[in-house]
Amino acid sequence: MDNNTHTTLSTARLSPTRLGWAFGATGVVFYLGCMLTMAIVPREKVVVLFNGLLHGFNVDPILKTGVPVGEVVLGLISTFILGWIAGVLIAGIYNLGVRKSG
Image (tube, rainbow, N blue to C red; front, side):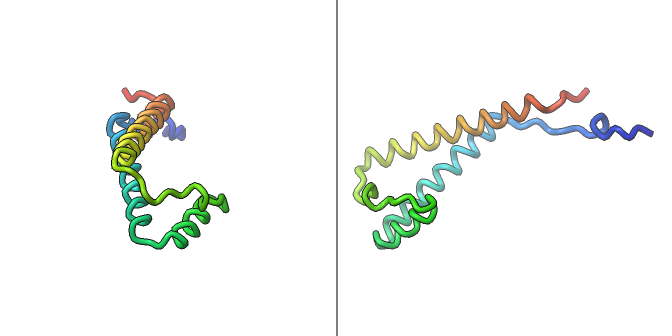
């Protein structure tokens, strides 16, 4: 009996494209959640929330509540693209460490 578990276990490879889509879509959901929060929560409470999320960084002077539609669209697209790139890179780097079965 072989006690070397590295040769008996197979590890699945990740699909870079699928993980890219998953990361991109997740980023867009977070972006939309942030937009919704800023739309329905009073500014003072949003500042407290984001200051807490950013470990005390004061967002009050830079928090902009009136964002033009063009900037929102650009933000959504940019967030998706950056998330997609992150997912592709993570899957690619992960797959480098996975032994090919066979």
